[in-house]
Amino acid sequence: MGDRPTRADYVAWRTVTTRWRDDDAYGHLNNATYYELFDTAVNAHLYEATGVDVRKLPQIGVVAETSCRYFREIGFPAPIETGLVVDKVGSSSIIYRIGLFQGPSDEAAAEGRFVHVYVDNTDPARPSTPMPDVIRAAVEPLLRGDAGPA
Image 1 (cartoon, rainbow, N blue to C red):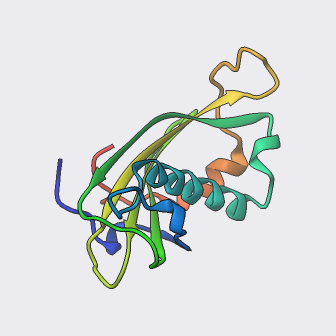
Image 2: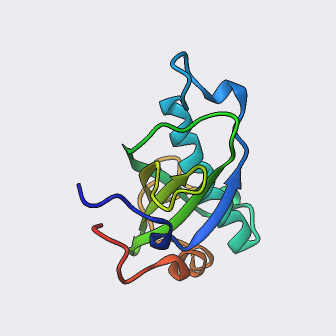
């Protein structure tokens, strides 16, 4: 499973406001909300770094895998900082890791794994295809030599 990730493990950052509805009946962030935050961290980065609507590209990234390791509870009302790093860029796939931080701790409260596979958005069968150059250019700066296991 590895050590608990720290802020130094991530490259790109975004702060997200938590909402009352994000907490579950137990008073901490609902499990589904973690996955929404992972999706937002990745796709917001792609939008900003490419300057294009990534949904309208001829090749689009679809989620092939997600997972989450939980280290401590977080929730409303404090904001959450998302850290983003890329472990691997293939010809048609990208493996991201997203750390969630709340408060001053240097250690992640949770870490997600998020895999995009690029498919042909013009073909109804959506076969796998090489990712667009604009996406590759947006994610390669997020690669770290010490980013951890892929």
